[in-house]
Image 1: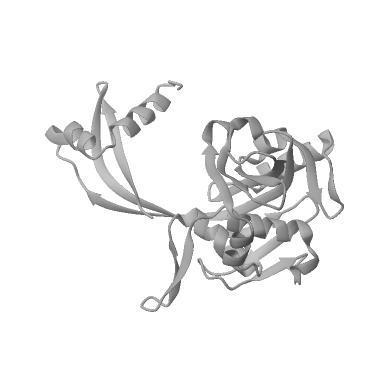
Image 2: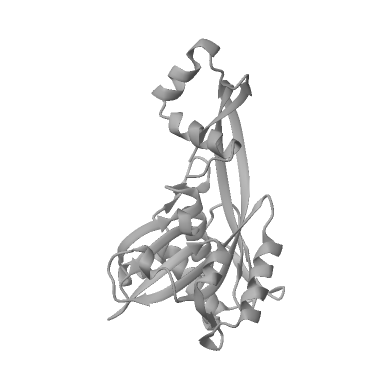
Length: 265
């Protein structure tokens, strides 16, 4: 999935578009961090085959309950699909590349995404950007629904009352909360995206910000980001603003300018 990016400069308080760039961000989920352990995930691109290591050793994950739940959640949080391209001889993502990375991880962990999604149908989906939530779902799980959240780890930790570990669901202490936040900050870098994931039981069928609280914190997804950029066009100075408006980018530029000069929504 390619995004259009404008490279622009400001001259005498007027905007000057320098060029148009096509940008693509590929993701590869390389680790899952639970309150108990770190699991390293190997695999190329979006290929469904790979290995799971814990402490440097390839392991059987069938008894790793927190890890298995992370893999199961990743299938629910993805609307993408993986398809093998016989021409390129590679597995490619149909849909969002971030969601494709979640799906590839689930496959490497041995989860049949289609079967799991059929058993746990999604009742509602969305996101809460202002709350730091990148993806949110409510799924059917027997008599009680489950709300799933993936997003900013420290934000999710602040909303968590419990953690899910090998010991089961237990209360989260301030010491554990701080330890997990420090771990999240240590893992993050320019090329690494670290996202927390959490759940909670819910009697609701619809997502609202009111259910974003009293969470069970499950851990972190660690994804490597690879950015590819291609310059595709230059814009004539006299037609800059017209081109921007026609292409539907004017609001985006206003947002960028707002951040540049400190404007807040």
